[in-house]
Length: 135
Image (tube, rainbow, N blue to C red; front, side):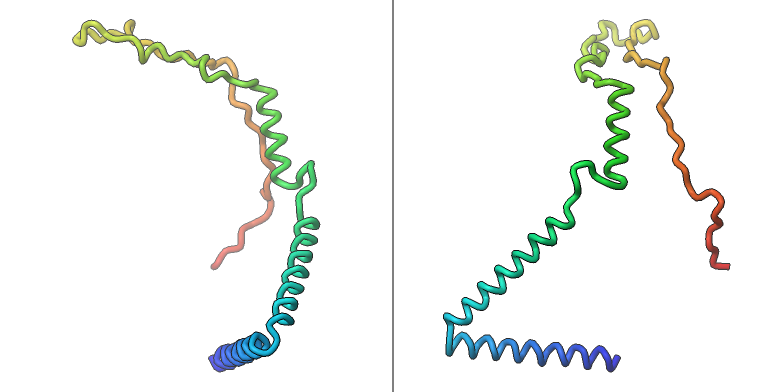
């Protein structure tokens, strides 16, 4: 508790000195103040650009993102692109003449391709490792 009070007091004193110094520099030599601020902004911009250049992803990607892209490409290759217009929607357009008659022969269901099963893959995990328990 005392450390927090000392830290916050120290930060308050430093900010007070910075504010007084900024005001003094602004009153006595504003040209020098603005040139210093411009210099600090340029240096910060250069450091930011270097940081961005160093941390940007390469074209191939890495980690989970590249694995996701491979998975999407494999899925598209396996299933092909499905046309949105190829779906059967005529069951919505047909009107029933007699509302009292509801036999199963009048209902139209969309066509489903059930010949292919789902494309499932096994994800390796930590099967042998035991969980840490609180007991």
